[in-house]
Amino acid sequence: MIFEKVVRPGLFRVGGGDAEAAHEWTLRRLAAVSRRPAALGALRARYFRPAPRTVFGVDFPNPVGLAAGMDKDGVALPAWPALGFGFVEVGTVTAHAQPGNPRPRLFRLRDSEAVVNRMGFNNAGATALADRLAALPRPIGVPLGISLGKSKVTPLDEAVEDYLASYRALRGHGDYFAVNVSSPNTPGLRSLQDKAHLDALLAALVGEKPVLVKIAPDLTEPAIAELLEVCLARGAAGVIATNTTLARDGLAPADRERGAETGGLSGRPLTGRARAVVAFVHRETGGRLPVIGVGGILDPDDAARMFDAGASLVQLYTGFIYRGPALVRAATRAAAGTAAVPTGLR
Image 1 (cartoon, one colour):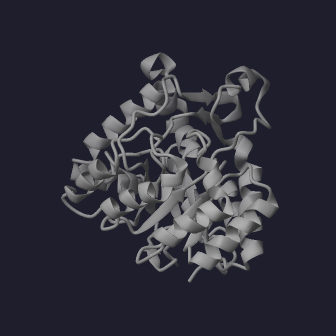
Image 2 (cartoon, rainbow, N blue to C red):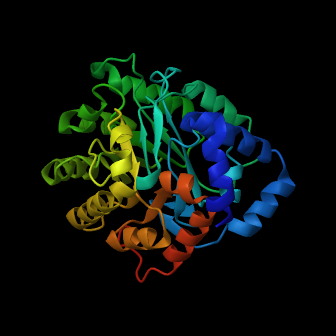
Image 3 (cartoon, rainbow, N blue to C red):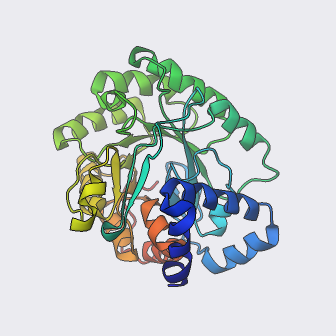
């Protein structure tokens, strides 16, 4: 409640209400906290709760993770486990450093508890991330996922080598890798979810580290089923469901004008669709592909229902923006209370 009544209103005023300015301000503060062991310890005592699981061969101290996009370049890595997260996914990172799309490109829809973004994979590049990870004075204490995307300057017919360049630079640092072929903000990227493109990509990337595929919520069930066939055939370790959506269903009336901004929508309007995709993936694969459920988790009931739908792990992004670290702690408690372990766990 302190976060929602005091901290969040202050953050939302940073930069004159500019969402990206608030995001950057927060990352700077968390980066500073990351250099203070006593502060990290105090936060961890308040927010971290254990609920261990082993998924695709990786041991997770709890199953609630930070989604990609929050800390693209890994500038505040020690802070996230202290805020309760059982794993952290950095990126999406590309082989070439790129500025992303023009600002403004991040918009809050407060009444809808949603966000629209068209960031466009702004990041310092795979080599810079590798250097930062190599320079960390100690492990962050939880598994690290790395989300890989295609550089905007790279043609689609050269996408495999582009992803491979990032993977080669970073493979010594990640506990798992996410193949982001579903962002709506890089032209043509979602075509990499098609069978032939995805088959070639996974054939190149699947190896000694677990590789997961992040899918769009806007795919039809037949398209998802075809994608899952490729994932199973090529030995993908799992699926991340879902990315942001191009749909604008469920927006509050006050948010409809701003909600019409170009980009992907996340948050409360995505809750039902993301859970339905997780359930479909779990059912279609018979639990053979573990699922990381992400999209519209804003309270512990949302987390519990995502686990009940078949998710082995969950990730937070927009929910964390609106609810803060108390949501991480509550979602972990919800995970510990779920009735059954999904069959995707192994």
